[in-house]
Structures are given as C-alpha cells and as structure tokens.
Amino acid sequence: DAGVIQSPRHEVTEMGQEVTLRCKPISGHDYLFWYRQTMMRGLELLIYFNNNVPIDDSGMPEDRFSAKMPNASFSTLKIQPSEPRDSAVYFCASSPQGQGFAEAFFGQGTRLTVV
Amino acid sequence: AQKITQTQPGMFVQEKEAVTLDCTYDTSDPSYGLFWYKQPSSGEMIFLIYQGSYDQQNATEGRYSLNFQKARKSANLVISASQLGDSAMYFCAMRTAAGNKLTFGGGTRVLVKP
Image (tube, rainbow over all chains, first blue to last red; front, side, top):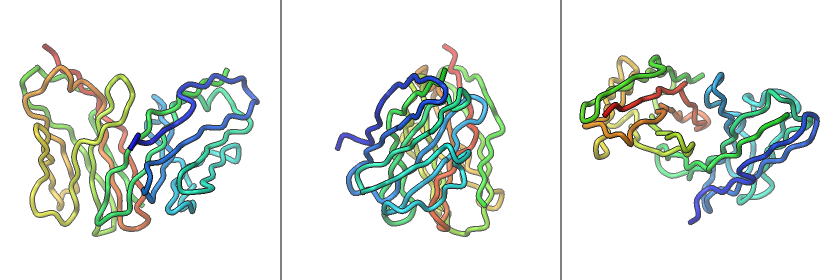
C-alpha cells in the first residue's frame, strides 16, 4: 500500500481564498483524522471520522473550516475564506479498527501558507 | 475528557547515552492505548511504540522502551544508546475506548550531541 496520501504537499494562497486539502487513507482503515500543526499550538486534532461518519469535530476552529468524507477512500478539509492565521501544516492520518487500539498512519502533510 | 502532558519542551543528550522523555496522561476510561511518535526535521510522523492499559509488561521496540506506571498515569519513553538520527520531536499520544480519538501531547524536542 502507498500509505496515506495527501495533496497538495504545499499550498500558497491569498487571504480570502478557498482552500481544499485532500486525503486518501490506507485502504481498509476505518478511522480518519485531520490534524493541524503549528509552533504555537502543537498538534491539534481538528476532526475525525469512523466509517466515513464524523465522530468529533470539536477541534474545528470555526465555521470557516469544514471536512467531509464522501467515501472510504477520500476526505477533504476545506477552509473558506482562508486567513493568515490558518497557515500551518495539516496532517491526515488513518488507522484500522482492529483489536485494542491501533496506531495511526500519517500522510506527509500539507504545508499551507496564507498570505 | 482525555489529556496528554509532556513537560519537557526540549533536551540535549550525549550520543550513546540513554534519554527518558516524560509523558503523563489523564483519562477516566479504564481502557486506553498509549503511543509514541517521532517527527524528524523532514516532518513525517513515525510511529515508535505502543502500550495498552491492560498490558502487564512494559513495551519494548529495539532501542525504545516504555516505562508504564499506571497508578501514576505516566508513560515515559526511554531511548537507549542515543544516535545522531534520534534528534527529532517526540510526541506522546493516547486513544481511549470512548470514541477512539487520538490525542497528542505538546511534544519534546531532543537534540543528540556528538
């Protein structure tokens, strides 16, 4: 398997523009997580899905952020409108259901810069 | 609610020596799993080691071992015989049976000196 695939790897956009980040989880994984990483706030969980259903979106900073998982092999995180303070690295991770607690496998991340 | 705390923002370690990274957690769920991840300067997140709350033995993976003290709610990572390639950020994380969300601590930056 190719692992968790995120696109784009880098995104530079102007304030006010819509940004869409994409994630393809590992096939067969039931959980998908979206994280944001900044120097100031560390690694924050934004939202996570189980079997394509959002379970907890309490980490989504505000209404400008939305996430969808239309099927088991694709998820998007959208920011509209984007602001400079949204600049961060956004990670997607997936994990299987399994027995006990499985580790999450991370994508390479999308580095977002909003100017 | 679940919470992970890493109190050491950064530390130096001499090459070939051992280093202990602290992690304390808080949850009311009796069933949980604890993880350590490494993030080198290249940015990827690499899974290192896992400890389940009901595991009787401390987890070990090569040079990594987890000092699990359940009563104290601590899960410290020990890296033995440090190498220059161990220089990275290290994150402690937890999943609980309630929801299975994966929550991370603030991380500890380790710099290995030659």
